[in-house]
Length: 218
Image (cartoon, helix red, strand yellow):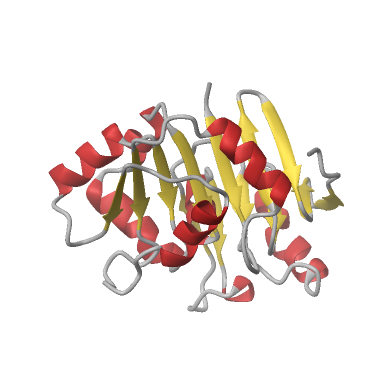
């Protein structure tokens, strides 16, 4: 059964209820493949995201960081053999470019392991996302990027949503006519398990230009 976690960012560690569900879902702990959020910057090593898993008592036999130093063929093998794939937070555009350059998206979609993404990683797991200066990106021209497409919706993750509700609703209105958009900030997560969607923390749904706060399910 496919299991995907779209994470925001966490002030300290995973909330207890989220950690417990992750414990239940991640039963195979042979290998964790982390895809850098800034694959061309060697200092981005996933220490923070790994600490969340460590605190939740989720340890792996092997840890692998995939960035520009890893040959493409080796990166493919690491993805194919991974128990869990974790797309780290960082630079959304550079991570997206790296996924395309290394041909990783199809491999991730075919993986039988749990797939997780934090902030930029969560955004790139989704089907499409809006790159706009009003959402924190550089450049004057807004554009739509294609993500991995693990699920048929868009994600806005780790954005100061509560203080920018009107701006976000307006900015994402056109895309929300095409697909659902899940928007969140800190200390929150969306879990997709089969056909079930679970909500942790403050998560909003933007659909057909309207925005709704979702109830937590766990």
